[in-house]
Image (cartoon, rainbow, N blue to C red; front, side):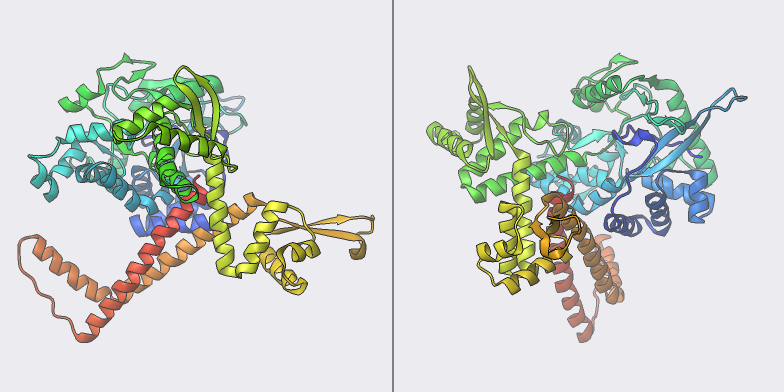
Length: 579
């Protein structure tokens, strides 16, 4: 097999099993991989999703691809953080002395689905920072992972940077701001291994941030020549050298988690490793061009910021503009303390810290008005903000992000029910959310809807899995005349169902967009050739017939609507599946 750069994996990855994603997410992931990297990568992705972790030998057998093509597809997927290599240690038999180690590959479905959110990543960076920051993030999104000098060379060749070179910040300072904002992160060096015969598994983490060179990246094409087989052998030799140099055995789950937390919370300007001690400052390495680590976009940080923006938007709609701005400020203060994307509550923040942060952004802010907004949010029955004690800097507050996200989900589900089944069905859905278990007659009376219409709407909602029915028998024979039938809403199941429907709708919209673009393929190719000639400094004119012009205008209108719908769907996918 081909051991390539291996990453530290999530908590469930070292247990010898994989969690199969839902079919809609799997189909969307395969479609995204085919659209981005080609049919071979899509075939490998589909095999990994259907069969879980597979070795290279098993993948070649499952996909039917030639070994060289299967290896190249794996290299591309690993380069773009879509596949995670892990070492499998087989326990020796009775008469064997050495263990047999293999490398298995696991698909990272979430990383693949993040590709839908790349336009939002770029737009957010441009709005929060500048166009130069966007150029660097765009390079990492395009290549998956790059070294800093490769990223700088790519950005320096762009026309925008050449124009802004004199007035803007140097690229190393811009990149340092991205690192400090956690928009980009080092690609972890390491792997998790497990024994096939051991249910608990034994973890081996590799130290991160070594002074020696990083494992090979696919972007090193000038120094990586030869046939595919020769490139694979060279990559295998380099990677095995890295693995053998810095392996650190961590015997227990507690020590493993403490090491991962220390790596995650380490100041980027002062990297500490168990093997090498304190390294030279990261800033010095970056400015001197000695930084040789691979970097990638930190999608979790973007998802965290999008979550904060969605929470502030709901509070702004529910209370007022000042309350939304205040909540977003509180989340910005406590953002660095969040470890997971879906934290239930923010860390406590004092009233004095909130006032100081608001004064930095607006010097004319009134203290009394801010205190009134805090009291109003704390007293709100929705429990958006909680007061968790006091100290010398005033009262401490924390944001109940889980509660706010639940309110967002309920709002969106109600909108879906109203759109699909009408206003009376939405009234029934809200009633069941509030009252939990109700009989059909009680629902008709409370919702003020005729019994016949109530029955029809309830069974429509039941078919769509938005409500559930529970049978409570008064006798052992379960006779219908002596049985209560209670209707209720299980919000977790509804959220899961809507999440599946969002994936399915996204797949359908992408298929429609691809179909519409394929209808005018010839016209689009003519326009692309003309644009290429203009970009090279030449002149070009394209003559189109009246029919082609009409079809082109129609295609652009449809494509604009479909793309805007995909962006809106991605916001809902983030709310229902990643929060």
